[in-house]
Image 1 (tube, helix red, strand yellow):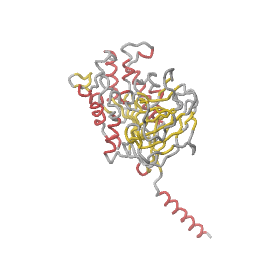
Image 2 (cartoon, rainbow, N blue to C red):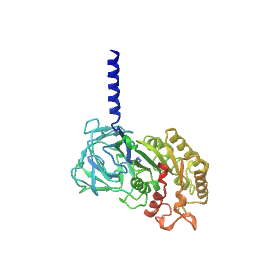
Image 3 (cartoon, rainbow, N blue to C red):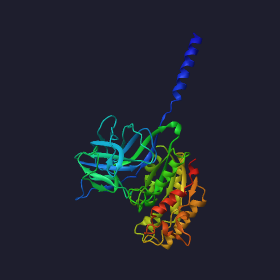
Image 4 (tube, one colour):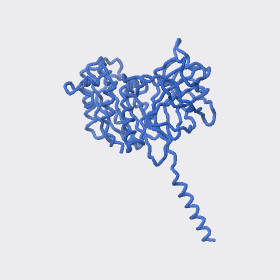
Length: 403
């Protein structure tokens, strides 16, 4: 009796061991866009009875996908009448036979409460790394007073009337230069791949302002392409959480970095690494301060960044600090602001609080005028890089940081 029990026990153990050899699923973020809110004003086309077709450039491939739909800045429940995902055929068109309907707990429709987001069921499709997907979401007639979108991402998306979620093209659509009602896509990978995500957290320079529209030339895109070209890092996705006009200490365009950090970093699927490039919009307010919070010091910024680093480390996330790029001469610049930028950058490079440093300031500056962009990298506004500058930034990141 005892021997029979032992035999069964060993048989059971063997079955468990055999089962454990099957790779488990591991979900990782492959694309993200940090949402902000906007009021639907009179004269604007209503989101109701419309399809929003979002074109997203993913970083990491996988064996399945799931989509995050958001109503985080909405003031009313948001009814999703239909949602689809497909592979892009360019522009607003989709590849034949690639279209998949999204479901939500098995249902084709869903209601997203005001202030919330929802996650779709997994869809068995195998998108390639660095490919473009099309997420189309239809909203039937309803009251929509506030939209939840990410603007200024240098990407063309489309608004079509009626339910056009499975339409092969975006003919008769209106262009929209924002990602609306979709904020993230995850892919399923094998656990043996040890896939993880890198969050790039910042403002318009991370968002890719003044890069070529629809070309995916932002510095996080350059980083994603380099990661995929290296076998040691091809298991890493990149999640761009830049917001144009964003500030560290106070709300600007979108919630402050301190306010949105948990949402845009800690809560991201599979996040393991974080690159922070933020603070130039706090500094820019020193030119003409008109609110009490505009008169910031280097110590104020250092406090804010230190908080973010501590919160990331509490969750086991490695943090790489990036120095602020030059911003003279702009309508945003001032002698006091430049002093704060220099002190802030010195702290980033010498404090030792980060797990690594990326010196974007040194990479992009004109050696003859270190407080200005190298002309070959300057978009013309002296604040944002152009494509060549973004490429230099993405190319300068040491990939061994992620080994």
